[in-house]
Length: 418
Image (cartoon, rainbow, N blue to C red):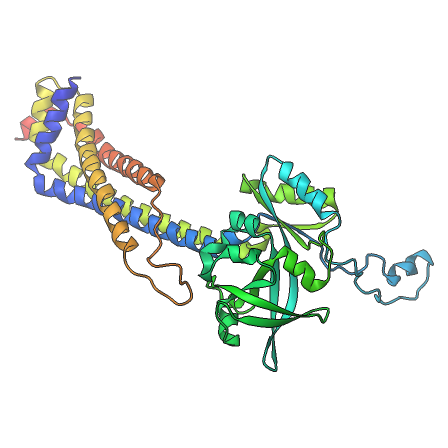
């Protein structure tokens, strides 16, 4: 098989039906361009939502849950072999929200090679005093540097800086909460803790995540300040947040840490199961639509090549009569199909990048997401590789069946018929 000659013949056949060949290539171009645009935009959207929710969630959270007593009076009826049923009356045990031996646990976790880092936290409900009105909310006492490293809290701060929390008696509050209280950066607010303590804190920043439920109640202060507010010692910690190198290990390590440290633990998949399901469904839809577009383009190539075979029966008969085998004829049409696929694919990659770039610069401004200025796009080379490979595969299959038909043409019958 003379490869160069076969390719030259394929190019000649393409030129003979240039208009139809261009239409087929445009179909491939459109399919790949739309595939890349849809997938890039959808994954960009998923990444944005992940940043709002999943990236703000630890992979593993260690804490103490309020639980009812395991030993209820009703269990005594079996021991005394009595027909009398006792009611469940033992209330949840007040073992405290603090994690026992938290510093030792944090030190152990930091030494674990599977873990990126650990961020301790204190979570406590409070009342924000606004005149004679008390607004319920939550204060998160955080290790400022660890929180910034693992959760990039500064990305959601619209006024002030995260480093300002290092100051004593300072607080960063949610945008919704600031609007309710009519306070701004630099103002002083009063809060009442769950234990009845009254404290005065200086607002050093305002954060806006974009989720109203959080922005209307959430606030941040340093661990030291939170411990002082609650009148607790320096080892008082209610939550230990863990981020992993391999996020898929979260369910397994959650069980391991729960048993090892005798604390309650929950992984991010359990916490955000509904949210992750939505992200997966959006990705499936975008891939499905893009693949359908490429398949439709493949059918277009198949129809054009099929028509070309019927119109080029004479040429095929002459080729076979002059010594070309059925295998040679098959490869002529396969190369013809692949030339369409490669040409359309390369233009599809170019237009796909152009479309995503256009979307990326379109202004997207909303009060709920002040840190987002344009529509989200994920420029991942993986989508381009998937697009071109699927396009080549589709055009190869689309050209294979007409090529097999052409390879079986009997030149004697064609010439006799003419």
